[in-house]
Image (cartoon, rainbow, N blue to C red):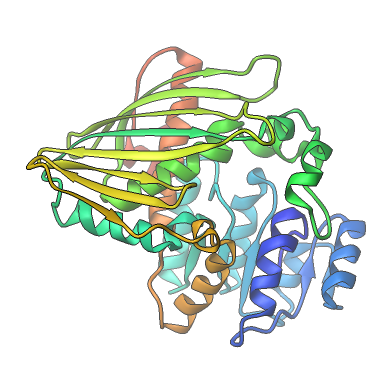
Length: 354
């Protein structure tokens, strides 16, 4: 486990320690205090303050990287070069060329990479994917997304505001993890829209080819509200609106609507609902997810282990994660330039400017 902060200690470590096919052998973190707290809490005594030392130790077959966004690329690259399978938290990396390089290394070495997108591990996500890809709504015309969430305090570095909400078992996020763009790469687009757009790409099998974004920071160093229009590579167009300004106790919205020539699908992620509406007047509501099913945080780690063991499908693959990186990177460029951005995939693959 590389990184012993909030997400690692609340979700990944408990899931892995409860998995019958896993032995958690070592922890690594550059913050020795945080590292010691996690080691004591979980009873894992082998510790490294320099992650490359863990990679070279011979103690692990695979690593989870749950560190600030800007650190993902060098850590994943080093892990792959040591022939280790990787689970990396989202967003995968901050620039598309980095993602393409990591994909190449993983493919050359036959290593499995999973990225921490949780919603894909629900039966609703699999069902929505089947509906869209099997043509149950005909040809895809338009995708509409809304992601309104409670995250502004993180962008302000006021992490204690959410103590009562998340009940961190060991430690919460550092103040700078989400508030400092040098670590986070941005705000709402990196932290929240990356979830929603990864789902869009995973469900539809499409990628963005053009992006036009508007972003507002208020008094923050990172974006708080975003409005993004885009065109997919098969001709459909879409929108994604998002704000992190909700307060504790206010209902959140995380929904995606997929419109086609023969009907539409409504995917309400946070409410565990999925519905199909056909143009002939028929409708189908898939049985709701239980509260435990809505956001199966431990399923990412368990699914990664299954992929490594050859008994499961990769529901959060790195290729789709790179498509998400392309989109988010183009959105930030568009907002900065005040103009649409066409994604040059070939340039990104070769390390040029996308």
